Length: 530
Image (tube, rainbow, N blue to C red; front, side, top):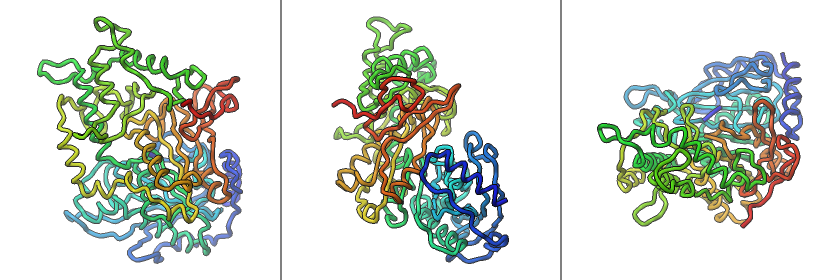
């Protein structure tokens, strides 16, 4: 849900491309008349497309540009034309103004590639068109891509759903804005440079990941390469599962004088420490190295019952209600027929995190991004399932059902998936389930077009005690354009000392083979034992 003279721009591109580890050639500067950028205002690029501003931006040095999330970009940003506009501006439901706002960055040194940048949450704002998702330290713009971002058809706070009252805005959010913005962005790009685009790409995480999935499913000819991160592909089910799990946890809570769950006391700090130690005792060494990370997720079968007190509750063990709550919550809800409503949640080190606005999966009692912690002790699962299934916008928004991708694969499309194992919003197992079903539906063609990467310790899209800085954009480009299939991906994390480790195509994992554990050569991708 995440996210500066010409000669200097070329120098920055040279240095950042080398830092990325990509084999892409450095793009050469294009001789662009000084007024070509500003002249875009008022030009027509399709029905209803209004260019409101077009400004040439000088190159920026490393560490001076914000992506909108986290620290400034480690790379520089090249000189480019920054264009803003709106598509199909109108007055909609309730007299509110609607339209798809967008921003596109057109670098002076263009490499012939186009990238659509996915959004986050319920969108509602136009993020800087940089292409930072899964791009390591060098975003797409710094590599010479033309990059476009958009608000999906409405303005508002990231979780403000009031736009759903407007039919067109709801449809644009659900799916249509992806195609609309891509068509507009491609028209602007080809018009500006006076030649066709060589290859088109899309990257996104969370809502952006869902948008990237629907691009492969519903607009299969539009993109050559796609990177999907932690997709919000079935939010009705995942939100239901979170609410259901909260009730399971609350049943293990001490009660306040009103009989309501004291959520903050379900898993106090001491018990979180017990759970973390238990997970590491059972799973840490499965990757050959005890380092506080569970890298071999496929073989981690954590059993909370092994932490249960044999007598009364003590500081170094869990009560039976706590153990039962863990078992039920992490297994996920099942319907009346016993079928899963949503995927199980993986046990990983990040589940015990109690910090920030989006803590780990265990309840903290603190208010979250959606308000106060729920304190209910009962849950009508069947009623909630019926409500989710009856939600028309939800059905159109979801991307977890469609698996026939033969048109996308048929033109050589490549798609990479990644998901943080400690993601508290969307289970990494749900995305893995989709990947497996897509493999079954598409056969051998899937192995020639897709990889899935689990990221142990990583929270939602980034963060956690994880090797969460990695480049999947370069590998998907190399796969599309050179036929070079990706395997192990270099991943790093920052701390007192930079550490690097290979990120392996799941279910393989980086197994420690000896040497300096901060160096990638001390690990080898290995398949889990059956």
